[in-house]
Structure formats: structure tokens, C-alpha cells
Length: 149
Image (cartoon, rainbow, N blue to C red; front, top):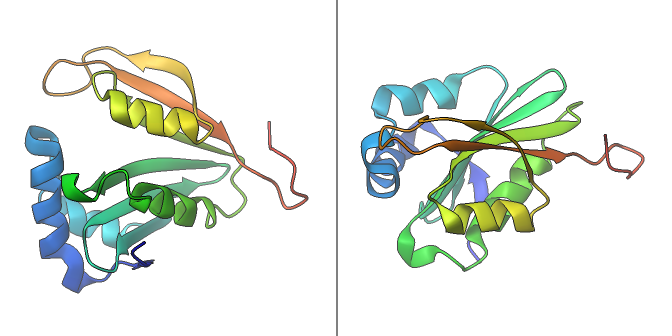
């Protein structure tokens, strides 16, 4: 499995290209990627070979999973799990993680469900293609090792 590390400015062109390949019309442009890299409360990690990346934003007791993207040829290799596990290991005092995922992205929904996320809401017509976003939630483990509510 590829090692995961904190992203740098040098990674921006590769991340922008990966965004375009994975997310199409919903891809972040260079300005948006840089804003995530430099934003407060962000954790932005990449695979060492730049075949995937993930971004989270922590604000108080909530971590928002902004993105996980993996090149199609690297899917089902454990890379997305490694990226998610890195973000989960750096959640500060947060007690839950939230994310939105397209209802049409069955593979992503299955991935998140397998990693302890459950559906708590739906955002109708959230994406540019008109698909709904499922809002998913996962409690985080506290310092004592128990699951947070």
C-alpha cells in the first residue's frame, strides 16, 4: 500500500488533475484546492505516489470530510481506507465526522457504510447532475477508547 503524507503546494497540480478525472463537473479548481490546503482546521493528505488524496476540516466537535479521491486504477487497494484512517487519527477534540456523498455513488456509499458511517439526512439535488447528497455521520472514538455519542 502507498504511504500517506501531508500535502504540500508542490502537490497542487497533481491534485487538480485528479479532481478533474474523479469528479468531472464537480471538481475543485486550483484556487479551491489551494484554499483547502491553506484553510484553518484542515488536514490535507496525499498518497506518496499522488494517486489519491483526502481533506477534512475540523471545527469544534465536528470533523467534516471534505473529499476523498482515488484514481480509478488504484481503487479497491486499501488506499481510500489509508487516507480515511489518517484523517480519523487527526480529529482533535471532535466527537463526530460528517460528510456528503452522491446517492448515485454506490461504491462510495458502501465504502463509508463499511467504515461506520450512517445516513442522517438527505440534501435534495445537491450535485450539479441533480443527484441528492446523502449526509452521513460517524461517531469518533474518545481518548478513553469508547465511541463518542
